[in-house]
Length: 397
Ligand code: PLP
Image (cartoon, rainbow, N blue to C red; front, side, top):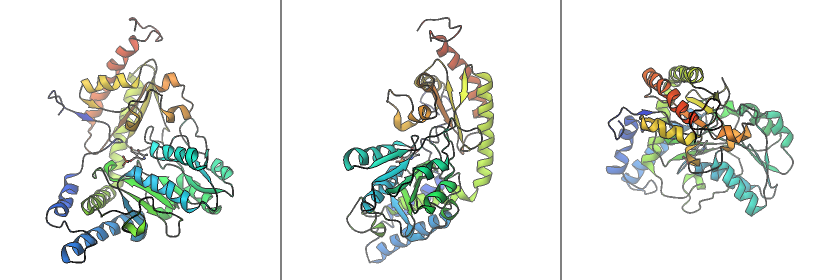
């Protein structure tokens, strides 16, 4: 329910999700009765350690990894920071070149900017096409003998485009360069098996798949050069110091297990809603365009641009009717610039300003989709009428 007593339709699962009650249940004992420090040698501590190691094994099983290759962190951003800074520092003798794309989340792009601006790293941005897809051959061509890392996201957070990660990983491996993927948006809906993907480093964040906010992980393939960015007590295989947050580790593992227990069934149901939403919006809203790839996209992502309006105003219009959605990425709210993802895909800035991301989740129904498809044309039309640029607009801005 919204604060006006309206039914709320939550369509912002790419920003975050509610914690599954089964996850909360699994976490509770580790705050109240089994609160021991996992490094303590008495029973209370040993129980915490057992719970933590079980969580690590559960996650490793889903990733097809070894438990000691799973490093728990404080969030997806921290995982990305550790992957980038950690490899850059560890490989300083080899070189100072990193390859990425222009559509990464700021957890990647801002970290790379810092490495470039303050530490002399050179960053190559391989382009994306109009759907946001990277060409793996471009990555191969960009690798030099100074390249210490390739980092390319698994799925984009704004437009939902899925990148050809396995192909890119194969190319990087053939040239002996570690490959990191930011899989934060892929967690809970795409295959995370690190052998099939061939990745060396992979970031996840629990709050995107019905786990708690404030915990993530970095998969680190054994032998990958990586220095810790948080030093101290030697926890997490010496790669992330700090007393272990056992309750959150259990929460992440429980949420991941739940997501992967019914993966195909969930994806099928949500993709059906997504396709109804996309068809409904494109056929009923004037000057609407789908952004991202039509098929190579996350099962829950329906993202658009609408001509002659600003995304923020659509969000306010939707909010007034009880719908929670996003314009581009939630992390960039407040920025006056159009989305860097959309402009990298060649969408002109004036059109990129009118972006809307609707991201579905477990609790959404066909009724939610119908309701949004019914209300959106009116909201968009009213706003377009206020633009002096819109053909046939009747009012002045
Ligand atoms: N990477 C991507 C692709 C994301 O979408 C996000 C969050 O939206 C992050 C990283 C950051 O994750 P966290 O919020 O856990 O720091």
